[in-house]
Each structure stands twice: as C-alpha cells, then as structure tokens.
Image (cartoon, rainbow, N blue to C red; front, side, top):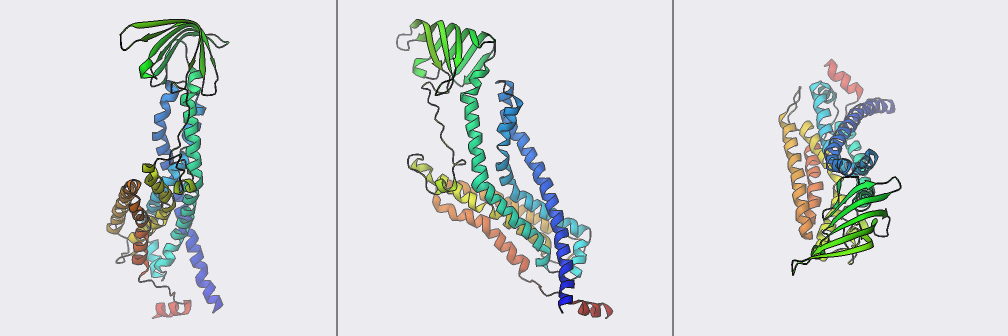
Amino acid sequence: MASAFFQIRNPLRRLDRYILRQILVALIAVTVALVALIWLTQSLRFVELIVNRGLSPFVFLRLTVLLVPSFVAIILPITMFVVVQFVYQKLAGDRELTVMRAAGISPFALARPSLVLATLVAGLCFWLNIWIVPSSFTAFREYQFEIRNRIAAFLIQEGVFTTISQNLTVYVRKRDPSGVLHGILVDDERDPANAATIIAQSGRIVPGAHGPRVILFNGARQEVDKKSGRLNLLTFSENVINLAASASGDDTRFRDDSEVSLHELLHPSPDEIRPQDIPKWREEAHRRLSEPLTVISYTLVALASVLTGAFRRHGGFARPLIGVGITVGLVALGLSFGNMAARNSAFLPLVWIQAVGPGLVAAWLLFRRQRLHVPPPAAAASQREA
C-alpha cells in the first residue's frame, strides 16, 4: 500500500515542478518586460532634467530606478493572470492537459502549482506594498525635491536663461573656473506683490540652510509700483538672493500618502493631515493590504476559465476570453472602488470585496466537483485490460 502511494505521489510532484517551472519562467520574463516598458514611458517625464537642466545620466538613472518597486507591485497581479492563462492554454494546445485529465489528475492537482506560486507572489506584494514601495517613494520625492530646489541652482550655464522654478529665471553671461559669476540678471516673480528684476556685475553661489543663495555685487534692483505704475530703482554694493522655490526660502516638503507608513496611514497625526484627507489615507492603507490578495483572486479566475466547463481535447478559447473580460472589469472596478473609498470611508468594504470576492467565486466553480480520489495502479491496469 505504501509503495503504491509513493508511486502515485512521485509523478504528481514531478508534474507540479513541471508546471511550476513553466509558470515561473514566464512570470519573470513577462514582469521584466512590462516593468522595462513602463519604466521607459515614465522616465520620459524626466528627460527635461537632462536636456534643460544639464543633469548627468547617473542622476537620471537613480531618480527613475526608485520608481521600479511601485511598477512591480502594480503589475504583478495582472502578469500572474496572463501567465497562468497562457501556460494552461499552451498545455491544452499541446495535448498535455488532455493526457493529465485522462490519467485521472484532479483539477486541484492541476491548479496546485499555480496556487503555490500565487501565494508566494502575494507575499512578495505584501512586502513591496508595506515596506519597499513607501521607502522608495520617499527617497524618490526627496531626491526630486533636492534636484528642483537645490541642485538645479548649481547648474546655471553661461549665456543661457536658466529656469530655477516657475517664477524664477537666472541669466549669467560668464562663469569663471573659480565659480565667480559675471553679468547676472535675475527675474524674480515668486512674490507677485513684489516682482523684481535684478542686475549685478558679479556674484557667487553659496550653500544655505534653505537652499543655495547668490551673493550679488554692484548691481541694481528694479521694481514697478503697482499703485503708481512708477519704476523704483535701488542700487546696492552687495545683495543676497535665495534660489529656493519659494521667495521666503521655506523648503519644507509635505509628504504624500504614498510615502507614509501603514501605521501612520491608519493613525494619522492631526498636525500632518487635514480632516478632509483622512478617507484618502485610509483608502491607501486598505489598498496596500488588499491589493496582494488580487494575485490569488486573478490566478483563480484564470484557472477557472481554463479548467472548468465541458472537456475539450484541443482546449477552447471562449472561456479564456471571458476570463480576460472579467479580469479587465475587475481592474476597472478596483480603480472605481478606490476612488469612491478615497472620498468616503463607508465604501472601504468594496475594496476588499473586489480583492477577495472573485477568487472565492472562481474557487467554488473550480473545485465544486472536485475528484480527489486517484485510482491505484492495479485498478487503472484492470480498466485498461477491460
């Protein structure tokens, strides 16, 4: 009896490894390809930093690579569905699925490798959503803030009108190897009530507590009095201008909900968040917890679309197409429910229903007529003889 049991279990283990290997290889290939494609399209937003600001390719690469964990966390549920659908359709097209069914292998045994991998991928998504993605977003936004408000000021080029921020433009005629600037013009409209144009013979950029500053020598400051329309001219021998994004030099960076830890999302500090933003933070927390479960749900939807229904020797395409349509609809519903929950926390249960509900329905359809009994070899031999 024991030897017969192990004779049955051994082929099943080999079958699990065979299917698991195909799904894993396809999952890695598809995920890497999609992440590279998304990274390429999203990185085009930062090409301006290289073309107009003169940043090095290393800075560009570091800035865009910090977004990769968020891409992986987003696409893993979709890629898992696509890969499971593709592999099992390939098995059906190659008649391998037909042989497995004819050998008496149950739907659960056929689905087991996919479910094991889906569980591991869901755990990876939990790790990404709760720890890695918030940390990478924080590093990304801090680095982006530093580039916009600090580094860009040190990249002022000769003979070029450099836009430091939306309302601050600097022109330098010449820059010495020692760092001294000559022929400086600054158009400062950060304070609409006191917009000014400043001209100086020379100057030097120095670091400051609130971003870089320019010390100007022998120049003039021109302002237009809005009440009288008269031009006011003030000459100076030395003046200091802060090149931070705001005229006040306040370089405080407010955190986005994508950067905040799970504990802070569920228990926000009243000093950091406005009351109207609390539902948005709660939705972000529940999304991080529920989104990994969609990996298992989408996998079960793919399995149900391939392994259920009437058996066909060459497989079929109607049910897989229905599965694709259902998954597309589930993704759209997830976005809609997320937007609703971000406005009103009463809709938060819908986020969990969208993540868990399809998997439960698909599991019921897949395993409701489960045949867990596998005939022993002796019985199978007698059936063949008959």
